Amino acid sequence: MISLHAVTKQFPNGTHALEGITANIEAGEFLALLGPSGCGKSTLLRLLAGLDAPSSGQIAWHAAHQPGPGDIGYVFQDATLLPWASAAENVYLPLRLRGRGRAESAAHVSATLARVGLAEFAGTRPKALSGGMKMRVSIARALVCDPMLLLMDEPFAALDEFTRHRLQDDLHRLWRESGKTIIFVTHSIYEAAYLASRILVMSPRPGRIAANIPARVPEGPTRRESAEYIALVHQVTETFRQVMPA
Image 1 (cartoon, rainbow, N blue to C red):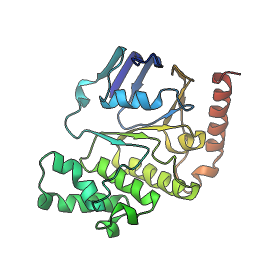
Image 2: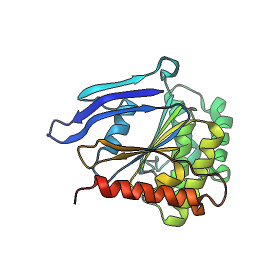
Image 3: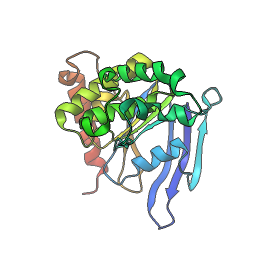
Image 4: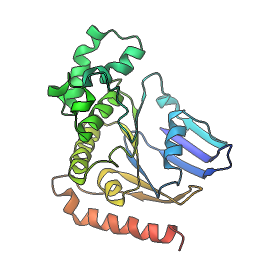
C-alpha cells in the first residue's frame, strides 16, 4: 500500500525525530509502531497522514491505493470530542464537513456507533461517558467515512487495564472483520504483541527501524495465554534490550 524510503524528519528547532526510515506497509495488515517515548512514532504517523512532510526521503502510495477524501482515519491519544455535542453528532462531524446532510447520514452514523458497541448512547454527551466510551466514539468518528487506512496514536494509553483489554479485543475483532489497514502507535510490548500482525521496533531518537518482527499469534479467547504470544513478548523484549542504550 505504502512505501517509505529513507524518510528523515528534522524540525526547525533542531529536534531530529526520524532518520532513514525505509519500510513497506501492506494492505490489510495491522502494523504496530513500537518504541520508547520520544522516538518519533507519532511524527511518523503524522507523515503518513499527510499532516507534515519529511525533511528528506519519500513516502509513496502505490497506484491501486491512492487515498481520496475520507480514505485516512486518524485516532488520537485523547478522544478530542466536541463536549457540547452528542456521541452521534461527534461521529457525524466528518460527514458534515464533507457536505453530507444529517438526515441522509443518520442511519450510517447509528450503524457505526453500533459497530463500536455504543448503539444505546447515541444521544449522550461526552461528559456522561466513561474514558473507554469516549475512545469508542473517537474510533467510530474515524471509521464513519469508511477509510482504507486507520492511523491510531496510542489511543488506549490513558485507560485502565481492564478497559484497555476490552478495547484491544474489540479493535482486533474489528480489524479481522473489516480487513482495513491499521497502523497503531504504542510503547507497550504487550499491546503490540496482542494486536499486531507485524511489529516495527523503533530505536530511541532519532527514530530508526531497529527490527521488523512478524506476529503470528493464534486467534481465540486464549490468545493472551498462548505460547506464541508469550514467545513474541519475550522476543520483542529481548530486541529492546539490544536497542536501548545502556
